[in-house]
Length: 248
Length: 79
Image (tube, rainbow over all chains, first blue to last red; front, side, top):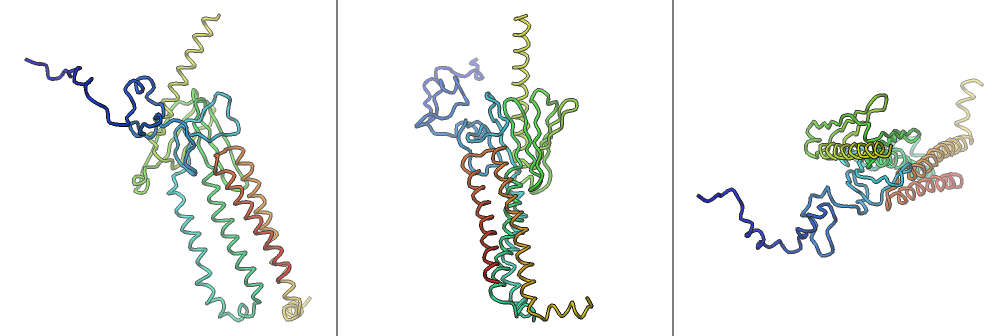
């Protein structure tokens, strides 16, 4: 009786790869390498694309190029760059649109008031321009930089949380990967389920601060990536310990 | 100063001056805020640098501060 569960090796060799696909030798050698010139990207998951300048305002980037931070070490590489999902900006965008169109509806009413009707055109122009500058500065710009500078960075050595609480207060905290004890991801709610974003909680050892990555895209993938980097960091630490013992 | 004297201020030519000073003070205070925003963006761009977008954001903050300064000068001249 022929064994139908054993694949015929000779048939595989004759099978042709699709045009533009990376060669098997290349994939075996380095499956995470970027596609060569002429090769079609997309045979590997998007998450494993190697360093290239990330899309501006990206909320989720793996191995991004063109990103650096102040305390970055010489051999330290950014593996994950995260922000809150862009969807979290929608409330302030809608609010600012309402505030921008509000004078169009409010002006006819205001002009009917006696003390406003006597206002000089110059004063009215200055006040209107000031109103728009205030809305732009305190709502649009302040909310945007609050989102833009609230970043979570995972390198091959550390996890860094840059909290930009408001214009006057910011906080930067970091911990080493080998001090992380537990990584948990959490998603819940309709909007979070539709747009696939949630929270990632990182528990650290001892008196180190815990990290909460709020509303980041693909929380499961984020926690998985951090776990992989933790494994690597621990293996590296183990190897260096053995090397130290051998030297002694 | 009696209440009548106080109300009298608003019927005199002082009213436009008071309004002007008040508007200039508001714009000046907002100018401080705009300068703080600009400085904060400059500092934060050093903490986290995203090549391509970080300079653009600082430019936007600079224009915002410039607009406030221009408005202050306009208010000084026009009102």
